[in-house]
Image (cartoon, rainbow, N blue to C red; front, top):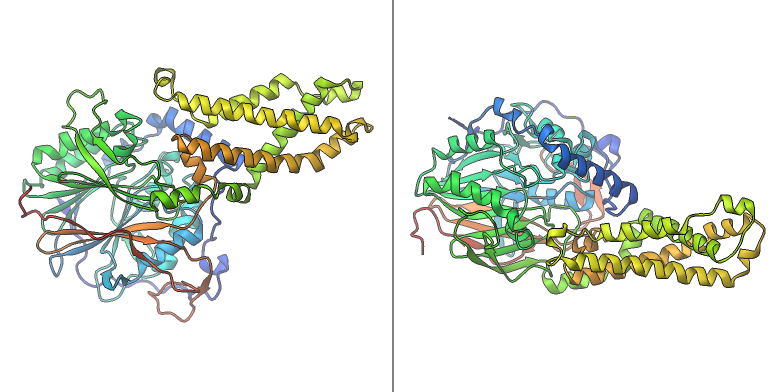
Length: 582
């Protein structure tokens, strides 16, 4: 049984408060947040622990099994006035306000003028994962996603069917076991986020679209597996799918790319296609995902593989993407896998050349975006220098009480740098030895810097001052200076290691680049042809103005200067259901 959407004009809304006159959080109803400093020590520790707990105990907190008790119908959006439908897709959006709201503002417009062509707002807004950063919580969703999108489209547009929002959880949505995600997106039948209404009851969904198209969105839970209730849900929906139908498959992560280094990453998606969709004889024409914060499209014989994670989170470069991938990878151990086919890299945003140039910005962006990270490096370097200096000279009894074991500091540095390089397990050492080599090299470089700082320190008169004079000078003078040098050394490491595919994510996460955002606007016409318009935003807006005089549906906040969007590449045309396959 399908849940049919409202076909008439949007239902009336209760009286809303006066429009905000300023950007004060008290008037907006949420707090616009700055971009996340991804290398902040406390954030690294908190996120790492939450991720570890989610991985270790995720099976015990997995609410997908409990979702079997919820409504299990698919959603029917196939009946439209003109027999066509517009869809918007955005992913990785819940970061800093400027980038998130820039994309939300464009998505909320009734239409966009892209290179002279009018593209209407999507009847459906599809969110592809990581709707909040860094951790899922009620306040996090409110300030980093719900608030900005409500401000962009405060009320449902008048005279047209109310747009509907569907969301698929990503790994950051999963860190609390989906509690906050389900509360926001699947809690009530009358749920809405601003002018968008929410329909879904689970973390996954199937939507029937016009002209024999379907949308299936699969929740993999950290890529581990697809649970039985979810498979039963999609099996039920697949009974309505016929051999002339075409499918758009949403996944939380572009496992077709990640399978290059981890062949088993694509197994769950391949299993879903083989067991749920293949028996229907329908054709999966498009796979779309976020998770990697850029736009990249691989094209094959009859399928497009699209990554579009430019909804607001830091931009990730594309220079490391392979020119061709095999999907599924031949190295997978799954014996019943689908036939491997080649897919060629067709387009990226930002492109490889621009991504390389952005990488060089790590030297000035890393300390500016991550002051806490620089402070941590300064403290470690200062403590190591004092330990080395203590080992090289004799001190009094009181000074010995404040001495730092040199071996302990050396161990901390080497362990931290090797773990930072994220080396794989021992069974994969031969293939990924570069992680170990670069991690160890980085640790030795930081130790060498500490040794050089110790030599300089021993040449200065501070060390002969009465205790605790040397400690005060080390904290006030040496610490800040060595923090700058150590941070630049770390930036150099990230730039070099990124060339070898190690810590490439950290190279860009540490910079927190807000520009180069992207989303998809898709159109299925009455004849069944799907046209995908990849939309890019070179520069996000950073200066905003309240619009207290606007109508009830107009954005509360407008850019002070025009926000420019453009096509990343020419529209991608996918043959409709009635067209013969090549």
